Image (cartoon, rainbow, N blue to C red; front, side):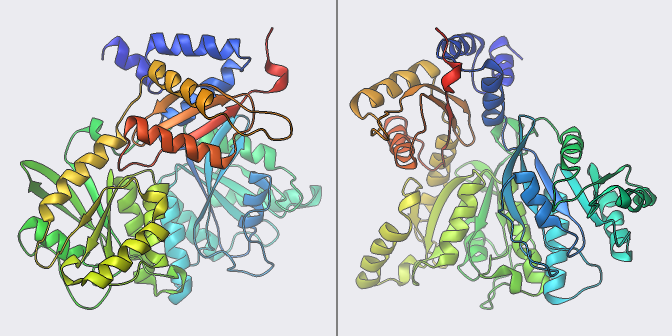
Length: 486
């Protein structure tokens, strides 16, 4: 590895010279170097570590999540089973940022909706870097708790045991009894009152990795991974068969035929790609039978492993809430994005007119994504799919040198200053691109930048540097008043 590559590993996307210059500029503007190191590390080393909070129903998982977040986010109700879907939040403790996944209660040998809840909790464990296992210390370890312990041992993830509902010294003995679970020290906590949560979070930080390795990207070698996603019966399997040139996947008029993702190595344009055909994501997932529910989770897993998401939309029908939600999943996952409108050959002029209006209205937030109009049945315009994927990947991996970026930001601030609010006018002082795949920027400012101005900056970044087919993440670090150095 050469010095420049080593420097890029150490400081996100920055080389040694850029990094030194950047830190000197930050110090002059009054920013804390340690905070900047933390920001660059968080932005430049891929996704944040993930902590899953699991346990049987009604042990206080959502209350604990709210306590970790320091705000009321997760739905809390005094009856079991209120949380059904996995819900992800961003948290911070002792200067370290991480994601918290709140899950529904896990129960063994259950059917229907309960099986679905159990499936998504199992998936949360599989996808997490560490797990907080919540047990009701007043009740003690139940058969279901013992089953969760077996699940956790099989997963092999670091586990922090939370003995919840210990409201005072009298409950310490109840907590100590949970040593018998064989998961190490039980941390006595009262999620409701906050007692013991600090010690619990200290243990969580020890269990979480500093910065997880990305499990995707061209740097790892091998074929680029493409996830075909979309709601049921939009033609994902037909599309895969068409690009493969043969019947590799079961195609059926019945929606939801595909349950498990099917990886296919397919050569197109002289390049081998790995296509992942996934089960359709259904609306109101938490009301499904267990198998379909788990299929939607497998779809999310395929998206996590992919570099590019090709979202298939049935052009013969109105763009639905499901379609926009699936696109949001791909964007939130930070994947390169291509939108393919299938069944284009069936549209008349009137439908095409209305589809364009729907795209303008419903997909304005992803107008940067390459678009292809295809027919999985006839093969129409299939040759346009690979160039669109390549364009999206190029945008996903685009890197703007710090010097050029700051010259550009200076032009923006001069030509379009932030609106004055409360007698003050916040200013972007400088910035850097701290990571790629997707592009991640850290801007340092003299005051809070409104969401509208951030969107304006993103739009101008796209106009200037391209970034076609990729989401852009922009975080802003505001200089503290006391931090200004003379």
